[in-house]
Length: 524
Image (cartoon, rainbow, N blue to C red):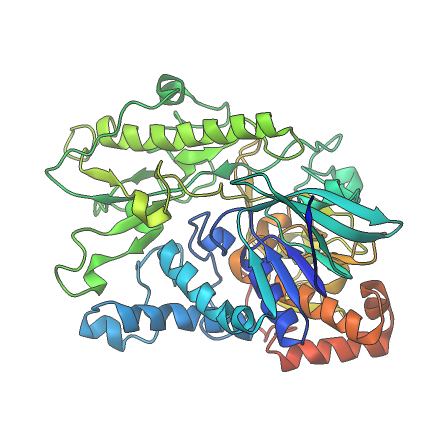
């Protein structure tokens, strides 16, 4: 017999959006159950091993107060627990990895420790109950309401039925949407449907979804040999070249829209060569007292291990596992190629001193606990954000659309990686944008809210709304919204469409440290 549990707010998915939602709801006095499919909360920044992708103003503005607290606590964690150099200790903007991609490139285990610290007051008080290793498998509905969600404990198969007046889908792929029969969209819309300049000509392609990546961590011990066994499918990946690529996937070639001539592993000093080692480096040993780390540690989420030969959305579990296995084979093949065949500047081949760091990701195979998901199922929302709401080129002006129902802000380019439809992707500059409340409200269902990248965006605008600070803001807004609705006997739709309630809710967000608009700044 399944165990039954009750709460005020049920959050399925323990990534950044789920954690932010749980803390917001608990601060608002609600009892929360938060489930997570892996044994690590944190999603992108922990189990998926992707350090924060952020905008250039992140140190001053453009995120919520609690996301800024997370960033501050990461730096404090290093300063409290690691022997840093005096320069690193004194640096208020310490970047542990000194990475190219992020102003706060952090090791996944540190991000996990900080998130657990931030959640601790609510967990210890009983306001938040975290259920790890729980996968949603069913949902019960009654008309326009979700009544309960059934989750399965993956180690032993035991099931629990979870009830709450409000349910938040913070899963990485929008997994509650099909389980609860909620209207949603996948893949690429057509230009005829959305009017977006960069959308598809002709029909929409629901199966044309951005690539996902299985990330791994490695360090480098020159003079040693840590070459792994030749991976399954290595010969396939060694010769694979998509029609849109300038060279094989396992090469130093860049995309057609890259500003760089080529990639390299380490810095070469040659202009136009991008050093991938520095790209997502999570530990720069020069930040630490000599002898603390024998090597830098870098997280490999590179163009060479983007996987687009199959989808894990709206397929059965067997097919999903098959595609994840192939993506892991690609990541292992990249490591093996780097160790044995990657061209070196000195004319040689391979870097056998590259060592897979299984401990960094807490797995036996050295791969991240979960694949990095760029594109989710997306609710059919009261309002859908389009390219022409955020792109200066599409708008003919430098600012993004102003939304009277803003519940937060974000900024990142429309950055589409290669897709399962065989397209290279695209890169479209955007202006700093707002998150409209209408994008968090399903067209029909009254008590389910998206709290991750499953909001009302398109294939294109997902590319700029999917990053860490925006996901956190979406989750935080969803948590506060569910609590506000419970306090006032309202539906989210009523909050949005009744001006006094909307203004009151937005005032609550502002008091909680959620920025609703940007100062006047230039586009990126």
